[in-house]
Image 1: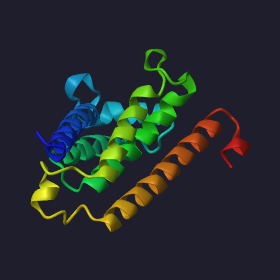
Image 2 (image 1 turned 30 degrees about the vertical axis):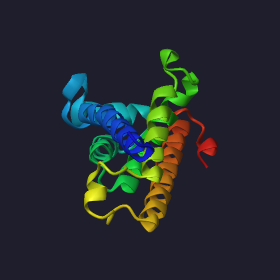
Image 3 (image 1 turned 180 degrees about the vertical axis):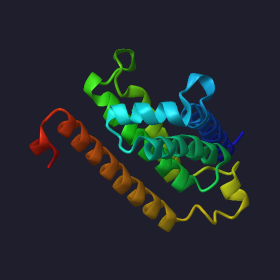
Length: 178
């Protein structure tokens, strides 16, 4: 087996694995599957975590995870899929960051790893065994990479900044929100 085939099989395995994990987590938020809260339960949790309004935040997080994960698994619109999933994971990292790095203590290790994998796939591309390859990479162009990651970074920055301001205001520190 030559190097190119091995690389493409490795990208396929990585896309399928990361995509499946993201789909599962997003499905918890959107549909209540796998023990998740569904939209209503997730919306309440999002409000509690400082993501307001809760329902749109829950839908955005669920779509970023499940939608981004599904597109990554298929290798379709890979830059946008990777950027969307990475952006969703940035929000999750902000929730877990106060608990430190390691997941066993509630830290941000797991969402950070998923975000890095998604971003890496979005930057690297899906490989030969993908819908992007079958379509001639129409949705996997350099300009799309730049646009998708710029929009995702901007959106994640706004979401996390708004969350931090909401938490500071809730704690009675309005000056910290500014």
